[in-house]
Length: 135
Image (cartoon, rainbow, N blue to C red; front, side, top):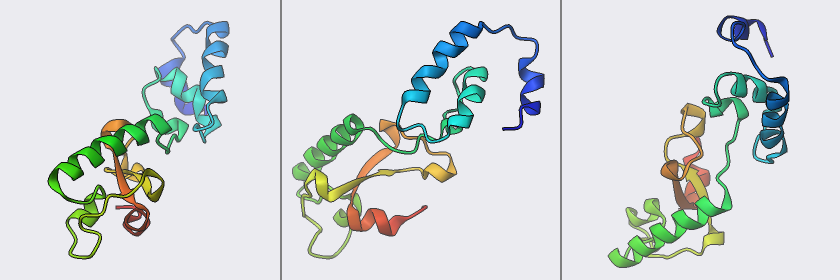
């Protein structure tokens, strides 16, 4: 980490060392945080820029809720619960996939600024999710 760039925005602020140490514990223990080096910058910046933690995956609660919502809507329309299959012309146009046959997908790509929140989650069949890639 290049600490120099944090000097200007942070040098005049007062930080409680014990509170900072306590605040580091939660993201440091989170298995979804893949960039441990970004924790201090995240905290010093007001816990706003989640990209610094590199949390790319959706938690199980979000996946299940998104799956349930999509599946209910799809059944009501007689279409597939995979949005990409539903607009296709093949045999899967009306297929309802089980949760374990689907992957959570970032509607707005994670690499392009999309976050890992329920609002940015959609469930796609495994085939479409892998074909979609970074789009």
